Image (cartoon, rainbow, N blue to C red; front, side):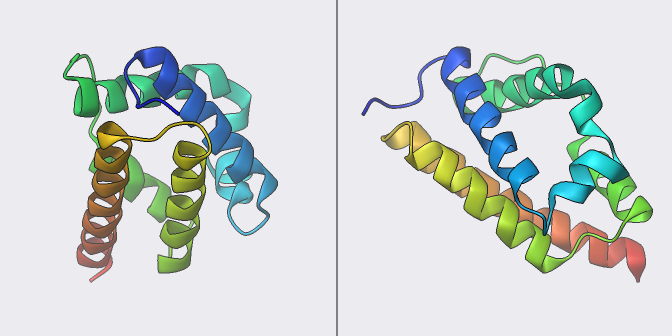
Length: 127
């Protein structure tokens, strides 16, 4: 298997990742009912590709506030440690099933860091 090298590679990962999320009843409702990502999936996948492309490939172009997006979701429906564990498991599986290499490891490490940061920020928000 090759390493993640292009935005097309990242698109494959996030697309497969979202298939896994939608198929997992423990977390799917967040994406189908709470924020209804399934109604605008292609647009959402492109945002994620832009985020990961900027983070891994240095392409730039991501201007959203990732933390605030997740704080807003938590306000609508509490995000738990289990949600983040499920999220990480599915993301890592989507990466490992399709690619191998340094960028894959970097993406997995970044996602763990993001998970920790989001959980800390959510706890701070909720006091």
